[in-house]
Image (cartoon, rainbow over all chains, first blue to last red):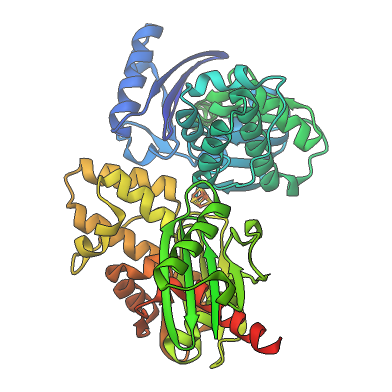
Amino acid sequence: MITAGIDVGSVSTKVVLLMDDEIQYLVRPTGWSPRDAGLNTYKELLAAAGCKDSEVQCKVGTGYGRISLGFIDKAVTEIHCHARGAGYLAGRGGLVIDIGGQDSKAIVINDCGKVLDFAMNDKCAAGTGRFLQVIAAALGVDVSELGELARGRQPLEINSMCTVFAESEVISLLAKGEDKRDIIAGIHRSVARRVWGMASRFAPAGKVIFTGGVAKNRDVRERLALESGSEVIAPELGQLAGALGAALYARELAAKK
Amino acid sequence: MITAGIDVGSVSTKVVLLMDDEIQYLVRPTGWSPRDAGLNTYKELLAAAGCKDSEVQCKVGTGYGRISLGFIDKAVTEIHCHARGAGYLAGRGGLVIDIGGQDSKAIVINDCGKVLDFAMNDKCAAGTGRFLQVIAAALGVDVSELGELARGRQPLEINSMCTVFAESEVISLLAKGEDKRDIIAGIHRSVARRVWGMASRFAPAGKVIFTGGVAKNRDVRERLALESGSEVIAPELGQLAGALGAALYARELAAKK
Ligand code: SF4
């Protein structure tokens, strides 16, 4: 059975083809049109996988752009798809922390990937990938370099949680001659604190499953482990959790038909 | 009797000399050193007023930079000085709304300018002058032009309260060909809503006294009147409320000596 999950996020569009238990995927920037990003990324992946649209038994969309996808069978909320995909990748339930391009979520799931409780921040850029983007731009580095630059460095205190005020602080710290890498470490700690401030109410018994684009940043991961006092595991394909969860939902729907 | 109030804000430094009931004042950018800004603005005003430091019987400092002023007799919190100055300027008590460079406050005062209750936002750039600065930069206009550009225009809906997300919305609206002036009107309404969201708990019986740097923006003033359903008066010297309040405290202290 082949099913597809299409996760159109604010920054990137992730498509997963689930062919029995084989996962094929593609990640592309969302750009200006969520509709085109979803459709084109899906078509490109089909071509790469040597598969026809008619062979795909069910397609589920998720992410903020899911409403503009005309070609899907069903749209499912991000929270549910993320939970499902993260549980599948981690092989267990627990606390999922997802930091995406412009939101962050904490989701408690059972071993089947069902949502038991959750909290979400999509109103404030602090503690999201967007915060890191703004700071990276102020420091003149690429957001993909942040993780390696900051690892093992001594974090400087960043007093403001607000993205706008923290950006000013970063500029002052640079002007004072502070090391960029210690500034970035401080920024990463600030993200970890902010997100843990939202997630700690779920006081997890075990490991934290860390997903979303920011989970690729190893330094944020390590600082999240320090803040939470928990082991933080970031599944290899964590950025795909939403799309994978959508493809798993699609498989369930197709099986019911 | 001559007394002085020195209000070192995040963006500008305001100094007031109170010579009996005559008010002399000077406003200068704070720049990098709050200490220098406070001292130099004070000296410059003394020179302009033809007055010597030894003739000034008491000096009170306020604003975020008050702690770095070595030459003052006493430091008093912003809330108290603002309340005192606003009450003096308005000639009455009521609800004072102050929007400064990087914070906003709502203060309920009695007819003597005493603080009865207050709320303050200095954690989030939304609903402060900083928000307007970020948006003005994105639109390529000067913050001082915003008020005139937006007056009488139809405000566009801005969905995000967050400065960072609102900035992205503004850029998308521009790309869609929307009129800058309608965008600014929408941004002003967003500031008014945000601030009124904080102040409305005090449900004023009468007029709102509007002070701080942003009170000079007539369009924000008009939209605050619409949001609050109250008449909004912005005293001519509203930006000086803090410094004036500090000078009034200084007069009280000097009288007690
Ligand atoms: S605190 Fe800063 S980042 Fe958060 S909503 Fe306010 S302006 Fe946005």
